[in-house]
Image 1 (tube, rainbow, N blue to C red):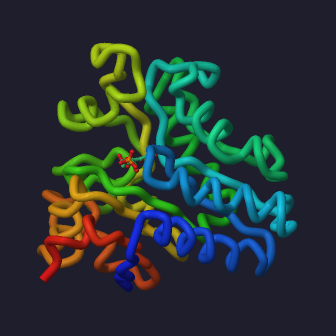
Image 2: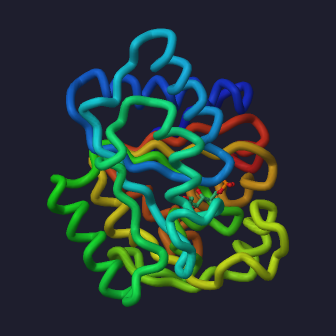
Length: 241
Ligand code: F6R
């Protein structure tokens, strides 16, 4: 795990965009995209580079990390709609090569398996972008998740539902279940870039980087990953020794 301390959230975004740019310029890339607030400035920077510097995603394929069970892809808060709005619809990544789990699939467990198989069929993820939950989750692998899990259906914790209620009109609207790539799926990505900004992430960052590898902090599994870069602003790094 290579930890890089940045002066600001803006610097975290530029550093993340640099890593994505480097990988995309090397040739056709399978990207893993996180939703949530943290990567949004990095996506904006990539969109700017696409528009002003000709950075092309035409050869890329993208898989999102997760999706809410019960939300159709057209729902404004589905992660498919979110990643289209935040990133994919602003660049030249062909929309048919944006893969997301179907939140409204009639059999979510079968959909989880189909999604896992589609990642394998694409040759696996070359570069996975991750955010970090305040409780140490990555994807929606909440504390207690198996470190080797594959894409599956999971319940969201009360804390994650509260954290994400800002995206919904009422807290009660936040779905209770999600489809998420497992920790084993995420760990199979060849390169991982995790972004964390703000004091709310400081404890999870400390547990991820300095704590024991444990399902109590799912992100700690990244200590085993051979090519993970962690990009932090000062606030998120505040509890590191
Ligand atoms: C999003 C995801 C989550 C978020 C995490 C942090 O696809 O899988 O793990 O990355 O909840 O969310 P933000 O960035 O909103 O603080």
